[in-house]
Amino acid sequence: MNTPTPEEAQAALRDVDRRRNQTAAAAGHSRWGWIVAGVLIAAYGFLADREPQFIRTWGSAIVLLLLFASLLGNTRLGGSLLRRPVRPRVTPDPASVLWLLLVLAVLIGGTTIAAAMDVPHVALWSGLAGGVLVAAAGPWWQRRILTRETGR
Image (cartoon, rainbow, N blue to C red):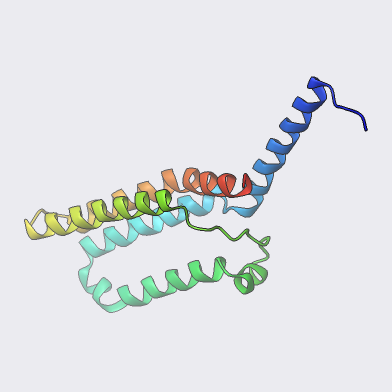
């Protein structure tokens, strides 16, 4: 059995790292998907602020439709219907779950406190904050979770 040279070992490690990143990129959603999701969240906040009657009438249906689309895209059946590659099963990391819960608590708590204080346009600002957060941090978060998972 031949022992690889240090250069061959470095090349092999670079190749493994490159393939890990390729796997994570193939399993994730595109950046445009995250941007569209952020725009939809911001638009929902805008509609809730400017057209409250529309949200009272159609708000639940819109939320349920988006939730169904999200669930469909994250299951094997939905992935095959949408012609997406099979995604790796990601086990929740306790630190990641805590950060996610903290961010959600800050957004929901801030919105609730602002609404209780009668701050104008709360739905608009919370929708914009949530939309920008999803559009900007979503791809980073997804890449972090998937590369962490493929590194195990």
